[in-house]
Length: 631
Image 1 (spheres, rainbow, N blue to C red):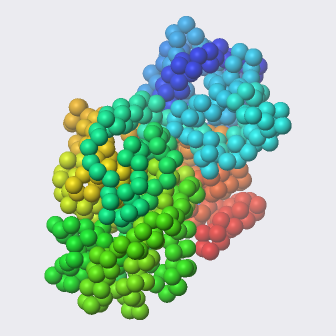
Image 2 (tube, rainbow, N blue to C red; image 1 turned 180 degrees about the vertical axis):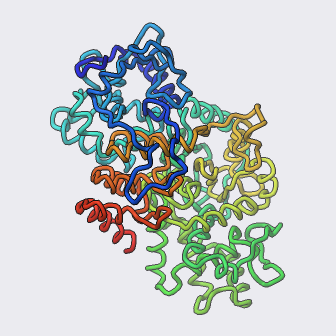
Image 3 (cartoon, helix red, strand yellow; image 1 turned 135 degrees about the vertical axis):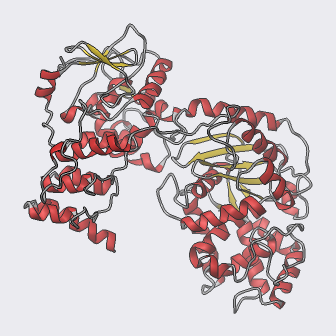
């Protein structure tokens, strides 16, 4: 039976066994509601506020759990000690499953609703024999999943750790020991992110086995000593040809970097992708493409030519980028325009390093005769919006090219593009999704200078290079990479960066047109979910009806759609509001960001449910979030 004082036998004796347990737990855990539920009465329409007959489950309490079953994790199966049968962990009846040494067992402590608190579960997995958890062990576990302690999404937890221990451990937090209550208190603000990480719910679940492939490709490209540093801008000629850095950031904020990833470098032409995305966000494609074309030019990036309609061929050429720059906040003065662009770049990088190299700007300004000539040609054909001059536009363009990033901060910029314009480490929406889509399309066809066609054929990932040696690479809905190495090939692309990209798609199916199902030679590091939507919905509504916040949090950690509905279009928010479960309503609205105004088949909203059943406090909470959504 489940005892309140029972201690799990499983301990984090070695980090290797712990990682195996976490990996298996993350991929095997199911929804956690005991029993199989038939949809009896599913064809009947319940009265207003009435829960359908198939949703009328008993409320599970610790006492009722004790009278029903005692659960152990053993050899990857859920074993019912009292009933004496084993349940395969892939069935819909699973409550919990894990895998470890066959001789070990652990009793899982259950809270209300039959679901173990994720905070308690993590503590029991990570704690030692003395019943204490080392902060270093916890941070190492997060790091193995790709999360950094500097991640803004972990700021509350890290602040809690420092507040508790900074005086006793001024040199670091890794040696601090926590009991269960202190651990829960420290991580409670960020439990959703932490739970997703440690349950392998990120886009690349096996991050530890993914990163060695990146290291291998990094060192392979390091041996490539070909290419020459650009010299047509004097300041570029001073770059160190030995610098070589690779950094990546996934859409879930998993980070990895290797090499010279903290060396600042100028974006140069790689900034064109972000400027085009920003212009599309501000004005939309119809307006922007009144001034710029779509097609590859087949000409050098700085050639003095326009398309047959007297427009720049595309926004990835110097001419097109100058016009794009002229469209951004054109009503402002020059200083305010650059400040606006600079702040947008910081937002795209999630607040990480973005700088400005004045020496590079002055160097470009004093030698940019070809860009001036192109500007005057476009001015003659009225390519700029009214009121803009060549000199003003060229200077702002030079300033944008002279903005600096590092590989680390640049990888977040790339990940923002991979994530549809939302920065993965801050959650801030920087660009509109349609703008990102259009920008990635032209990066695929025009982003690599005169090598764009071959790059699209061989690599098949949206990318934009710059003569500083930078290449920003986007794998849509997966991750972004920033590569930096100054030696360039004859097309103006980083030699090492090009080799890295080709090697990457040789191992992983990141090419846009790779077959994800029938090609076994390439690896797919992405997480694929094979779960029944109906089962998810049943479990979610059951937890909402019973007011089980712990279960709701667990489902959210497992990636369940918290706004899913039943056949009557009733959501978890409807049921929680009708039952007056304030905590569940707050969790759904505040943590899960579900809509406060979904309508069921009768046109009733959660606010209607709360008002009809006299739950005034719940009704006021919903009204508050409706006002927020409307503001």
